[in-house]
Image (cartoon, rainbow, N blue to C red; front, side, top):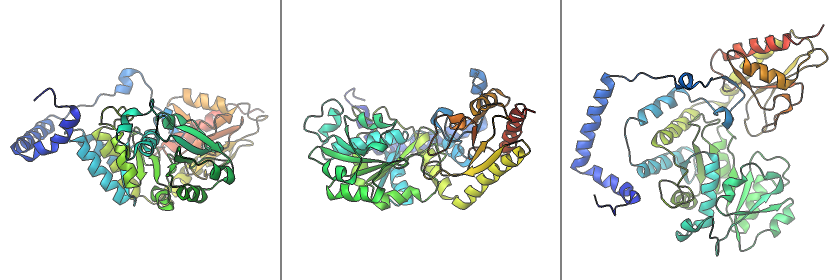
Length: 424
């Protein structure tokens, strides 16, 4: 093969090669390889143990630092099967995108390396659409390119950098009047944080004004499933781009996400994405196993039922609450955040004059126990996430990522920790 044949060209030529006799030989080789590997199954090594990393019971939720969600068996099996054989990555992106767009009732879709990557690729799409030369230029050479993104001041957050990576600049607004006046010939996009609190402009009005000015609207809905219907609610509402995390409520591979929306914008996002070289998204690579894993996770998630999921999570919360009711001054209530992580959580509070311990101390003791247990980071007045209340005497238990039987373990350990601090 000539050295002048680039990796990009090779990727595009791959499907043509497989059509001919080489494809037949490759198929035979794959079948032979499958038979050989099936004859001698690999023995898994517990690398957590080998590396000295201690797993934990997840009574927190789908937080990135805590490795997000656990994949259902169906998803794990799909990932393992996808790992057996190579495929043309562009063909896989094509097929997965078409399949997901149909299932999620939107114009087009692409699997990204997380919701944050979706923000970057969607922003790049808005800046470079119809101008392929701009793909190489961003983020450093923005001359002649629209790059202003309008956002409500209350919706500024820790993921702004994903948008600024494309050379974008934010224009903050607070009122509808300010929003109307913020549009100019450099406005390229408007950004809406779906779980943002304090914004004065609602979703429908935000879309209406942007579209009146011919500007696309982006909605970051990373942690906003369940309910299941949110996977199409926002695109059907009129948002031109919507991103979801694949490793949170969807329970796919942690380093995956969904970018959904208008076909022309998704097409432009893909041009800015890996495996294309010299693009802002080149490092945002998604492996074949992860693409397949997210597709499998979407199939799994769509087969679930919102009411059944909520009932199961409430059952776990009630079990834990029941084990704590004998402790003096302890109150336990189920709380469902309004948007992000919209599932039952257990909120436990107590009188610190009777139970001499803080929420943060409870969290630390749970973490140091055997088995190790992680509580929700809003515990003890830590950084409240997605509307979860917290305070010095508050314990927050996220029950939705618990495995069968772990609710009993969490309940027993919480009772032990709180009982040990009871005074009088």
